[in-house]
Image (cartoon, rainbow over all chains, first blue to last red; front, top):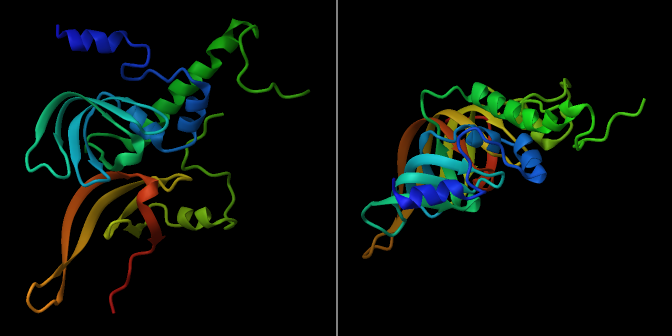
Length: 142
Length: 102
């Protein structure tokens, strides 16, 4: 196993496909915007076009609520490079993204719904403990 | 409850500018973007940041070249097609129904 891979997986910020961010603020942001689609695409291979005319094609490892991406096994061409580089790991700031190509085989609606369900499951996880868990929303007054 | 981002509360009235975009859902639209780019595609989804998902997109990039001798401005446009595209909202300038030629 490549030592770089193992190191990446042990970091608390790295998440496998389908894991929801543990920050409440980020969950709320994702839940209310189309970033949820990109989060549902974690694990898929896509092309991300950048603001500065470069592009990166690789596997989406992690997407956060601000659209910051981590990608693995990436073919990357910067705007001023005439050639492409192969990178094992790439981090792209959300601000620098212009487009994300969505693979043909993906069902957009289903992906968004699945991701929203994952977020919802995380939210209600603590409630299942008989009301002793932390509430993320104020309970409705009777 | 985490609702679908495309589903608005069931009101058909246009109350705010984003509602005008809601009227164009599933229709073909024209999007003008920064850096002299234009997109024409079918609007599948949008959000408050104007992040959008467009299907069957044609992107047009327009460049101006200046002839060295005559100093004429030569407008060139490059087009390409993408089947399904996620567009980040901060690049969007305007959204409109497709332009009618003539």
